[in-house]
Image (cartoon, rainbow, N blue to C red; front, side, top):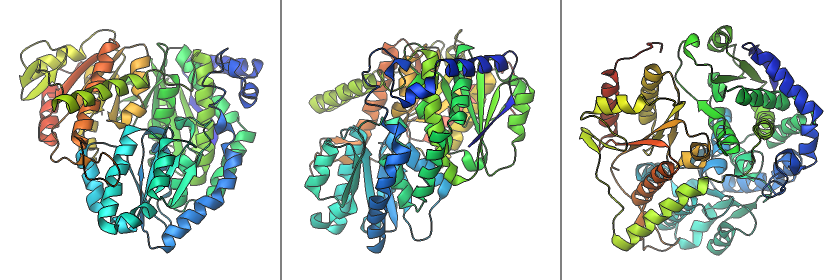
Length: 562
């Protein structure tokens, strides 16, 4: 991977140089390689046992053989598809590999399910033939509620088609040694258990089993991927330069890391988003990753922006050049080919660790993630006791139901008041909706309107996936975000088995998804965040269209969106 500076707004260029010199003087990279926890903290807790990713480029070579053997065996048995069941660090790298490499001839057509929305679950169940599918539940802890719920559902789905004696052969687990998933996989007779190095945190696991099993399933060349990663380990300058760029940006108030990518590289942004958000968003600080934001005029971006432009086998992007010409700092990352993902993953991981050094934070923990999980568990417990989730009354109903800080008697007035709060730095759309292409496109249009109306950076995340990605930053940064939570009624629902292989169920995916939305909203409110929940009703498309019409009726001060 090559790095180039497309532009550096004065006086930002000298600040990056100073940051690089500081890294050299403090021997930060050498100390990271030596596992020196004092780079970040005097206490080694959750640092000394989270640096195994530094060994992945080398030690994972021994895993190539077992991965290939497992994949070749299922191919020989007539399998044609794979479905990875995971969240966050367990699912994002596999998605990137699938998008970048595609599927080699004769290998498994891999898809990823990281949603508890019942419509999304049922869509996979109805389109995949369980007799020809390898299911890959992946979780470091072995207890991730989303992953285990999906595992139980699809195990029963496979057992219905194949019989209990054969269902386990269609599963291979990816987990840490000694986890609950390992024990469950042994009990159910899974085809294989891939045991990962426990000293690797989830978001730093792209080059471990959590990423490479999926890459092997689609026929990627694991040897070449790891070779590029080893080259990055030996020549870390791109990662160090990127880390200095991020650190200087954070210190200069350019903390909205806006990712621009050529079409072939656009999938990488979702993985970068989690890595940066969870690594840096804590202690009242953070770099906000802004991925796939609709374009706007280069001069319309605020002085809080920092741009990284990723390019893979594509000509130079005129948009990136225009942003640099407008005086914004833009760092270019050039991937030589798809195998350069091995280097790119490693360089971004080094850069995240270096950014943590500059911010003075711990880049390997996630202290605020558990808050939403605890509240969701409380919601589920309440449901199981009373047979219903908490159902607060809306603060305004004007076609759509609004919950939160509402002023005015109509939807446009309420939106104008919420979006007009002073001192806000970004808008996060939190979509607890099925992540379909149609809904994504509609929400991207909504982002474009919000950017035009406010000039603020905008992000989009689908729940519960974003809880394992940007959720830490949302609760751990300086608290200047505006959070718009979107919920809707599910068209259908699906039961979550109490146990794999059993038919009884005490909860459905619809209830779990609602509990997660309610829990995350309460966690944000408890942290003093500005949260507006908008319930779209039974028809998501109609609800989003109504929301967009309401925004159109609000006067736009800038009119800069193109």
